[in-house]
Structure formats: structure tokens, C-alpha cells
Amino acid sequence: MAQQSAKDIDPTDADHRELGDGLLEEEMGPSSSMAHLYRGEIHRMKFWRERLDRTSNWAVLVMSGVLTWGFSGSSRPHYILLLGTAALVAFLVMEAQRYRGYDLWRGRVRTLQRNVFAYGLDPSAGLEEPAWRKKLSEDYRTPVIKISREEAIAHRLRRIYLLLFTVMLGAWLIHVTTYSPTQWPSSAAIGSIPGHVITGLLGVLYLTAVVIAVRPRTWQAEDELHSRDIGKYR
Image 1: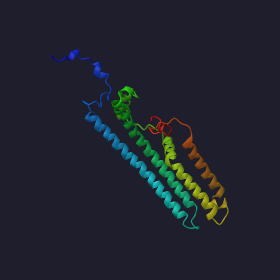
Image 2: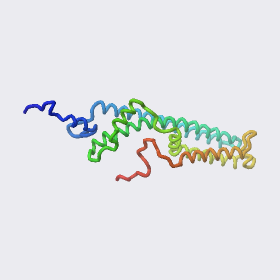
Image 3: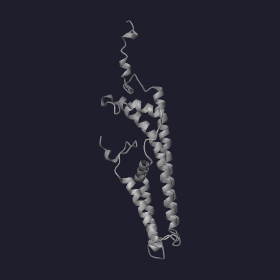
Image 4: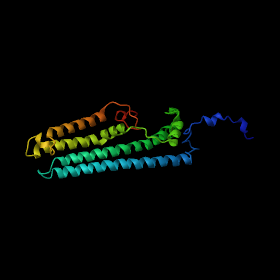
């Protein structure tokens, strides 16, 4: 049988063939370059995930150490707990910045999973993002952080830090009301700063953290596991 000439081949067949179409058919497999690309993105995502976890672990350890020392005797000053809270704020800001980087790599991984591997497993479901190749190409050409610092802080507050702040604030309240020889609010004073001023500042800071964490927003972070979707597609 004579081979089909080049002029008889419809070029649109290749031009319109989506990456992922036939990916997992018996005679085909993912190209070597795509496999290496995906493996590399997974490695970067894992590395940044470990950096996030490391910061969270340090925050919990510092909080535990401060609480242990602060309640080891009635003579311990209450402002030690406030110093521990300040350390948690520093960890929160640091972790939020790392989360912005983590979101960049996770977004690329999810783009490949949704539009290459999911499409290869079940092409009948169609593509979730028809222009995903252009989007990913632009991201490789000019990588940009896709979420704001405030959204990253809100995400980390929801996941862990709002709970840590609540524990520290509760511990401070217990300390100034039960461990001090004077009555509150005098027991909350630090030097020449009156106790009611310290209490008011802490209340404002805590309410600010709550508002940042729970206020309605359109999330830009690449977060595929939402609690409202658990069990939805079973």
C-alpha cells in the first residue's frame, strides 16, 4: 500500500489534538519531556510544602516553650506570653510569604493534572480550561505571584495561626487574672503602660486577625480541597 503523501495529511488533525488526548491508551504514553516537567513541578511543590510545615512546627514549639516557662511559677511576668505572641506574628508573616511561593508551584501542578492527566484518563469529560496551554506558557515565560499577602495571611490564619493566637490570648488572660497579686486590669500593666491599654490593644489585634481570616472574599489561591466539596463526587 502506498504511503500517504504529505499533501494528503490534514494539518488540522495535529493542530487541534489536545495534549492529553490518548495519553493513557495502550499504544501511547506521556512524552518524556512532559513526564520530567511534571516530576520537576511536583518536587518544587513538595519542597515549598515542607518549608510551610517547618515554619508551623517552629511556631508550635516556640508557643509551647513560652507557655511552659510562663506558667512554671507565679513570679513569671505575663509579658513573656506577649513576647511569644509577637513571635507567632513573625512566623505568620514569614509563612504567608512562603505560601505565596507554594501557590505558584501548586498552580502549575494542578493545571497539568486537570488538563493532561485527567483528560487522558477520561477524554469524554472534556477540558476544564480550554486555554490552559497559553496560560501555562505565559506563567513559564513570566512567573508572577498570584495571591496577595493579605489573602495568604488569611489562609494561614484559618489553617493554624488563629487557633494558636486564641490559645496564647487565653493563656495571657488566665495569667493576668490568677497569677498576679493585683487585680485586673492593673495586673495587665507593663511598666508605665496601663493594663486597660494593653488589654484594649490585644483585643483590637485579635479582632483584626479574626476579620482577616473570616471576611468573605474571592480566593485566588490554588486550593482544590475545599471542605464543602468533601464527598461531593462519590
